[in-house]
Structure formats: structure tokens, C-alpha cells
Image (cartoon, helix red, strand yellow):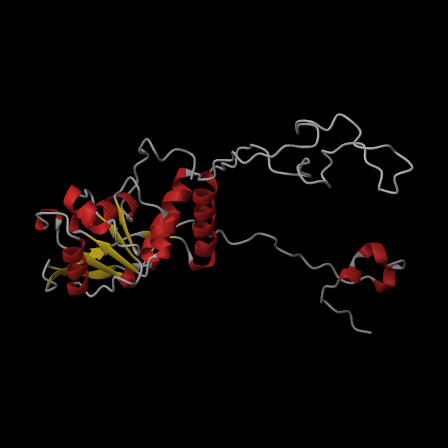
Length: 267
């Protein structure tokens, strides 16, 4: 019988009692190829629109992105960290030992025909304690700064095909007027009924008040930039200064170690 080099669970020597049935040893390399934690995506070219909706130029986004096989996990971890760290953890209930009252036996043990009761504050009774109810706790979890930055840049890179750039329009609104902002969105090809996220370096008071009554719109600044609003939007709208910020902070050329006060080892 010719010896086989195929490996199976029972080919191990501990299952072979005689020496003539031994299979030849085969060396197996358990070394996995090292995967790069981050790389760059192809340069994304974005159209630049004027306030009236005309195309006046082009710009680009050159961002770092996780490899395709790990991108989903990196973004998911960053999103879960953000959402879990928002939990206050103040929910609290009372157990049967903490509920007021219930010290007296409600009725005699026998001769009533009713079930035996030792307290009116049993979890089985209305007004009684809660079994395994929530107690105050800390829900916060931590994430590495580089991993958090990579998650944001990966999400931005994936949204590049649904991203447009609009010239600075902070000074275009002389007064707060939601109707004028909706008209501007339509000129840019945006549907007010579809979710969209704006990223601007500064949001003037008139722009903030003009857009806050639009339920499908999120107005973000670099300090409030987060994964949920990026992934939740159908369209991402940037300004030229915001594009420069993203290329500088999340781009391929970024190698700095300095962090903002709000971006510590957390979500």
C-alpha cells in the first residue's frame, strides 16, 4: 500500500500502534502572511460646485483606508465604540430588599386558601422589587487612536462616490431662512427628503439656524465628525477647506502623533 502524504486528524502518531503504518512526516508552515493595517485607496476626484449649482472645478480626496478584508471590522469596531460610549449608564431599579415596605406578612400562612405570602414586595407582586433589573454601570470602552482615525478615514473613503464639494457659503445667507437653504440644496442636486451630512470648518449662525429644521440634514465640524453620521448619510457634502482638513488629517501623508483634546484613547 502506497503511503499518502495527505493530512488528517487520525494521521497523528499517537493513533498508530505499529511502526509500519506510520505516515511520513510533512512540515506545515503556520506562519500567516502579515497584513498591512492601512493602505491608501485610489485618488477620488470630486466635483466642486458653486453656490448657484454650477461646476467650477475639481478637487481630490487622498485618504488612508483599511484593506478590504479588514475594513468592515475596523469601521464596525469604531462605530460600536462611539455608540456605546454615549450611554450614560444611569438606569436603575430596586430589588425586593430595596423597595419600601413589605416588612409585615400580608395574611396568615394557613386557613385562607390563598398562596403563601411572606411580603407584599415580592417581585411577583405589583409594586414589588425587580428581578435582575439594571443598575448604574460604566459602559465605556476604549479604542486606539490610530484605529479610530483609520475607521473614520475608511468610512470617508467608502463614501467618496457619493460626495460633492460646494464652495464656502457661510456668507451667502443674510438671514436665517430654511426655505432658502432647501432651494440651495436642490441647486446642488440634493433631495431634502434624503439624508445628507455637511462637513464644514465653521458653521455661521445663519447657516446653523437655516438648516436645523431639516430633519434629514446633519451639520458637522471637525470637532463633531463621527462615524455614525458619515455612514448614515446618503450624500456627503464638503467645503474646500474641509477637503484640505481631511487630506491633512486622514490622508496618506499624515504621520503626526499629536491629537486633539477630544480624541484620546476612547471612542
